[in-house]
Length: 337
Image (cartoon, rainbow, N blue to C red; front, side):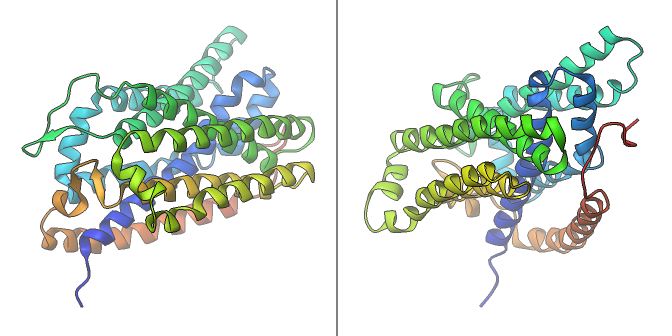
């Protein structure tokens, strides 16, 4: 029995995208939470919790985008024209945020410090919101005719894509708050506990709102979630989300430090699985499957060999960095400069 290289590549790219979302998500969440922590000392600690890992986290975005270009060129050529504006704004926001991350430590005056802090927060909000818009635009469907994008310039801007944009901002902020619970202590941690509770409710509400809206977007979505026997596969997802939400709130009540972050990751994973149930095997909904968009199997095999080697290196490096910088980050401790 031969291997389905296209399916393997789809799983690899989906995994890379998920790893980007959760790993860059919590450090984008730090920037989203900046306005709620006005003190410079608190902001310095917040940034120092992600300083060793934030740029490495974005490696997964490169793998996801590069893999899409190399292995699913039809999807790449279709999605980019459909999402030029939000993707461009997202990349600009990430660059803007990256510059602000560096410059806020070198600001020579209080006004300059405030300006770079604002830039860091705005870049984080912009990147998160645009990523959510891209997700919403993909889920609602891309018009394709003759293997090319056939929609308009503003097709990506809809009430549903705005909803998913806001949902991702709330979710990233939740991950950021849970990361601070894990990595900080004292007053800052207590404030993170309070924020995590409010953001947990906001994220659960957003998951519910997106889930309720999706069946109205497509008959295929309704068929997978609301008809038997397909709903037997899908039904465990909302039940697990509810159970994980309860566990998350219980962890906050008990002042657990690691469990809230793990629960936040679990909510993202379940939401991602729910999207997979809705979309698979479509890579450009509602008409282009992963097999339609894939390049020749020989190219897939050649790329897969190199990717396995590089992926092993990236995973080893990432694991080592997270292990090396484990533990709490405190005010006054050596940090990013």
